[in-house]
Length: 224
Length: 113
Ligand SMILES: Nc1nc2c(ncn2[C@@H]2O[C@H](COP(=O)(O)OP(=O)(O)O)[C@@H](O)[C@H]2O)c(=O)[nH]1
Ligand SMILES: [Mg+2]
Ligand SMILES: [Zn+2]
Ligand SMILES: [Zn+2]
Image (cartoon, rainbow over all chains, first blue to last red; front, top):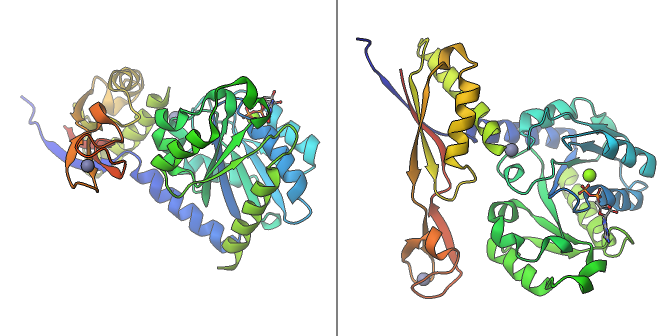
């Protein structure tokens, strides 16, 4: 009979990735590049919001975008056409989230010396992108009105890792029983520090507040 | 679908540990999975079977799962309670000033070689 031996590991599955992510953040700090990880369900309005935001930002700071939707490169092309800024498509190979290693590979294709802000449009899904630190300076997410104001209760981890929650599609609020104050209170139950900004990416309403948040963040990252 | 990604992480870690210990076959991997982690145990074992059998070192290797019960601590009344039953609100004092003590683990406990 073969001898049986038990080797203790006692290590979180996410520990390696957390280490990679911390290293990536340090490198970005040295380079003076701010990485934002933007998450949401599919169709919440990440691409639309980015176009509105970048068009208000691009004369003030240098922006680049990495698109990580599973299926195609339509978003990368859309961003490039609508804003004129550099935008690349990451191929996740069917993977439902990006980890720090994949983010780093993506960043290898971005001219970081010409960028102050890189936005990563993560794969559309509210579960696992929350669990994998990408190495971004901050996490932000978009919750759109048709998804319902109870999402912070159903996806607590996502809301607890986000520094900023954009509530999008406020133009359709009258057609849904979405209660903004109730939603904010659910978000703050999960994460007392989260900032909440209601927007309508279609018309651009509220987007200026997001632009200001980004400018403050990027500035602080580059100077402190 | 998330579970497959997690499986790839487990495989990477297990292979590294096995190589460090000069082991050429692993017969089982023991995981500690919290009740309120984002991983669904039966999906994890399904993904494991598919992916592990593609690795010489892990052919037929079994994935065993210990479930870690989720417990929340209340800062208001300093008591603990079952997370799954009561959620964010403390059943003793109704406070929301609570935090998860344990139960979100996705950990490799050990490997048997
Ligand atoms: N009514 C309304 N529709 C929006 C708004 N923002 C985005 N959409 C629509 O929602 C759909 C998905 O948007 P998209 O930006 O592609 O979402 P993504 O999958 O998160 O990138 C598109 O048809 C958008 O036109 C909004 O503020 N109001
Ligand atoms: Mg998109
Ligand atoms: Zn995933
Ligand atoms: Zn209590």
